[in-house]
Image (cartoon, rainbow, N blue to C red; front, side, top):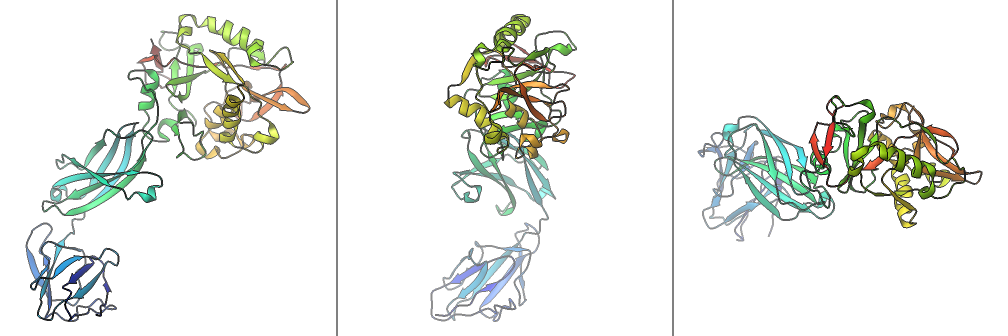
Length: 474
């Protein structure tokens, strides 16, 4: 039994009867070498359902093989050859086959973009370019991806959309698994249920354990559209060079992350303006926009635990906390990690992600933590507040071009201790030009408090801009 394969632009067909005699097509010129045993027909127009016979030596371009209408008179079957996109013709000498092609020159394009994604749902912007009168239905097919997006060959779940002829619409899918990867395919069909065009998009649902509806933290998380919008980034395993702690953090020059805390006055007094570092679990973390004064990191100059440090005990968690009045009750108790970050082991080796591991993860493992309401900036928080292209750089390489919203007009302390053999009682500080340094505990520098709001705190007003900052309440 012999066979020959011809490749062509639009269709691939196998005509098979399993009988002894066969006819071959010219593989090089794409010619139909014998039209006595085969004839083909093309649709007269887009979606007309009417066909005309074509007397040509070549397959038609711009048409789609119709597997329903294409038949052979002596019992042959016709099917697609997906692997070769080509035609193999095998049939009895007495058999004749008619092959039909549908006109698919709709000149319709479709494009998809991510509008919003949450832990259990996604909304996709669909834009159609072309004559929508040809479109009879829209169907989305969802594929769950276990690992690599390239392996998105799982079972498709079809989701019909009530299409009404619009060129722009949102396609939403609910009841998804949190922290999961998906591929969504949107297909457009004509009135004969033929696929006109399709497009696909990959996305990952978000992760948070206890987003309480109506709370401030939950509102912030649900404002997340996609990485980079308003400088908001979801630090999961898919975000390159990120903390990978499933936090939501603000980055860049000036995101809309302003909060008026400690006052009901409008406009918000300068001393009551705070910025949102991010959302960690079910809590939002704030930093004061201006400092509360200049202080020693540790006036005792003896090192030791942050739990007995006068800056922590007497200033931040006493004088400052009391100054907040009833607003202090909105602040949650937290663990503040002060494990030493070494220059040669960490700072000169790792970018922000590695510093984060040294500060937080290593500190947690060493149980080097102090409970309290108020702390200061971590060095890694400063690192991740820069533009994302800086996240793979050493913090010593940061400069004014990093567009870091946490860069302050004065030199300020961070919570992160520094140590080497000739400088045992030092800590890291941040300069007004977004450059990092270190100095002795007994040096005086500006202090900006940071704290976590309780998970139950609600959003009461505002949109996060400097002119209309968020306001929170119980």
